[in-house]
Image (tube, rainbow, N blue to C red; front, side, top):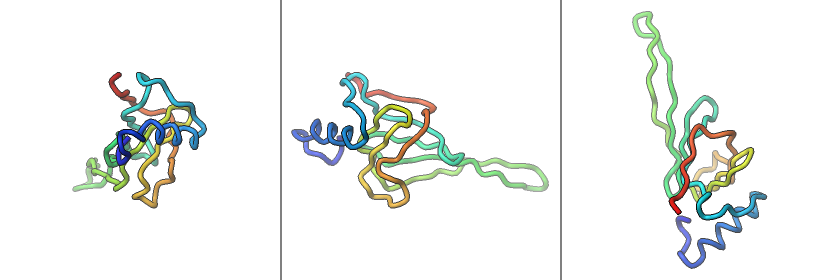
Length: 115
């Protein structure tokens, strides 16, 4: 878990699971990263990294529809991701615009930590 000393990481992870109302997944089933859709934006939450995403913006140029991908970012570092419906994603609280934990629906993709 980022920003937590090694000796306390398992305890901190278990506490976040408890606060989210989730059980602690076995080591091979812990989520490293998810990609999900929120308000028509595609976001990726990866443990230890800042939240990042993309939005598709549509405009007209000379009467033709033009789509462009706009990068999105958020200063929050992801601390832990817990599966379930909905998924619970904990961050370090650097963003006031996202709840903590924030909830996502079914992700587009899931990457697990290597065992």
